[in-house]
Image (cartoon, rainbow, N blue to C red; front, top):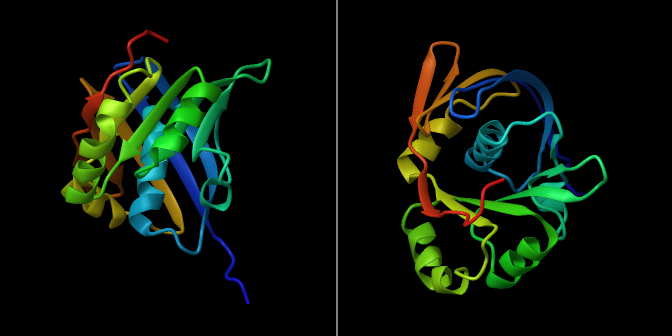
Amino acid sequence: MAQKATIYKVELSVSDMDRHYYETHKLTVAKHPSETDERLMVRILAFALNAHEHMEMTKGLSSDDEPDIWQKSLSGELDLWVALGLPGEKNVRQSCGKANKVIIYCYGGRTAEMWWDKIKNKTTRFDNLQVINFSERDTSELAKLASRSMKLQVNIQDADVMVSVDDSIVYISPIKWKHTDHRS
């Protein structure tokens, strides 16, 4: 019998001084049976880093043709495609063709570094692609904050991130491996 997704209730308060975005989002997040706490928390962090009133979690691991998070315009166009992990070159190419802006959030330490070394020269033509890496230490600390019912506070200033739950605080320093070549 197939395992079912575990439901997480998240109250996510975002204070993004860099974008002047201050909002609280009530999220119901389905954690796929094969998804780790680390990946779940990276997904929530990616949502916070791009928070917008039209931002949505998608089917993620349950669907091959959707990102983990997306933002659509009022006319239904894909403004933002957010993927996690280490997608193949074909997936990167397809997502860059579907959305105005694509952000890939990598994690996994040395494995992520090897993936980037292999794929980076093949991504130079994508002006709408941004690749950001989280250190293995940062994401493993973030995973420890996971619980079925969370009140997360995410503060972003000068591209540094502070995530807190109750008395626990994790500092994240995203590393930009590839910048977009246009402003959006």
